[in-house]
Length: 174
Length: 410
Image 1 (tube, rainbow over the protein chains, first blue to last red):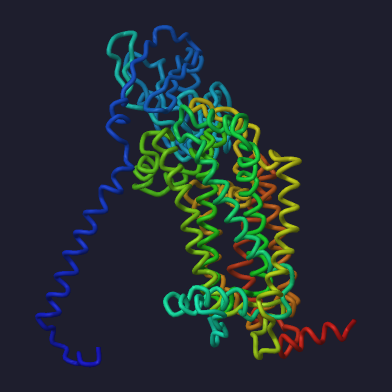
Image 2: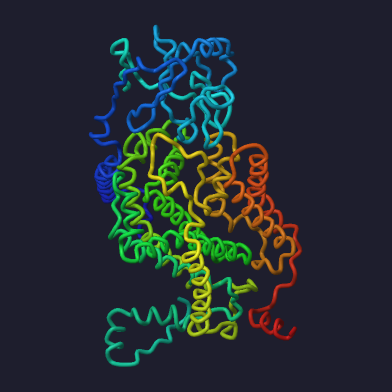
C-alpha cells in the first residue's frame, strides 16, 4: 500500500480488523462440531460400567473382564504373594505406590487393574516376568503382583479403574 | 514452466479449445516439449514409477471399496469374501497390498537418489519439502489402510501407533480417546480410518501436482549436479524421457508381478489372518517392513516420550536437510567423503530396519541405539561439517561437457 504512509490508524482499519475478528470467531465455532464428533459418542459412554461376580476367582487366579472395550484383570493374590509384596521397597519403584493404596479395605487380596500396558497399550501376560506379576510381550515391561512397573519402557503402574464392591461377591467397575 | 510455449494448435478445434482453456498447451509444454537434462540415468525414472504406483493404488482401492465393509463385525469377513468370492478379488487385493510395499520401495529409492545427487539444494528446497510431505502422507495412508482388514496386526498396530500420542504430557490421553472415538480401538476408529484412508490418496495426488509444478519451475537436477545452461544440455521430454520412464516402469512391473503372483504374502504377517481380538496381544508385534527403521528408533530410546520424539524427529530432520548440507557441490559423484558417508547412512537405515523386526532385548537394543545415534549424527553433524572440510573433485563445466567427457573415455 504505497498510499498508506500515515501512521495514524483510520476508522477503515478498525472496520477491517473488526470484520476479520468476527469472521475468525465464526469460523472457529463452526469447526468445533467437526472436531468434537470424533470424541466418544453417547453409546460408547453408556457402556461405561461392568459388574463382575468375583466369588469364583480362586487364590492365584487371574480373570480378565471387558470394561469400556479394554481388558481388566481381577487377581486373587495368594498369601505368599501378599507377603512378597509387603516386603518390597516401594520407594525405589519408578511409580512409587504402596499395594494398600491399590486395593479396597477388607479385600486386600483382590487386585483390580486395567490390563493395558502403560507404554503403548498392549495386553500384558499374567504370572510372567521377573516379578511374577505381568510381562508385556511388546516392548518388555515387567510388572509385579500389584501391577506396579519394575522394569522396561512403561512409565506408570497398571492403572486401578474406579470400582466398588456392591455386595461381598460383586464388583462394579466404572 | 520456463521459457515460451512452442505449442501450435494443429486444427481449428484445438485452436478453439486453446483460446478458452489451454489445457492441451499445458500438457504439451509439461510432458512433450519440456526440456530434460540429457544425462539423466535410470534413477530418475522413479518419479514416473511412483506416479504409476499412485494410480495403481487408487484404482485397486476404489474397486476394493465396492466389496469391503468397514465395520468391526464384518470387516475381516468382507476381506475374506474379496479373496474367495469376488471375481478377481484375490488379484485386486494382492495388487493393493503388495502395491503399497512397491510404492515404498520406489519412494525410498527416489528419496535416496535425491540425497545422493543433492537434489534438495537451492533452488529445489520447496520441491524437496513437498516430497517429504508426500512421504508423511503415504505413511499415514499405509498405516490406516493396514488397519482395515481388522486382523490381529491391524488391531494391535492401530493400538500401539495411536498410543504414541499418549506420550504427550497432559493432553496426550484426551487426544488418544479423541482419535479412537471411545476408550479403546473399536468400531468408530475403524470407520474414521476408512474415511481417511479413502481421502488421503487424493490429497497425495494434489501434493504430487504441486511437486511436479515446483519441479517444472526449477527444472530437474541431474547426475552431474550442474544446472542446465544451454539448449544443448537438454533433450525433449517426449520421446526421450517418456520412453526411458516407460521402460523403467515396465521393469518395475516385472518386479511387482513377481511378488504379486509368486509370493503375495511374503511382505505381510500371518497374524493378520487372525481376526482382531482386543483381549489378546500377539506375542511379537511388528509393523509393516517400510516402518521398521522408524520403529527401531522408537524402541531404542528407553523413555516413552523420548522415543516418540526421536521417531518423529527422524522424519522432521528431512525437512531441514537443504539447510544442513553446507556443501556447494550438489552431486555426490564429486564429493569423495560425502559419498562414503551416504552409503554408511544407507547401511545404518537397513540395519535399523532389521533391528526393528527383532525383539526389543539385549544386543538388539544396544545396536539400535548405536545406529539411531549414527542416523542423527549424520544429518546434524556430518553433513554440516563435511561441506566445510571436504575438498570436492572438479565439477564439469556443463551437462554437455559431462556427457562428452564420458563418451570420450570409451
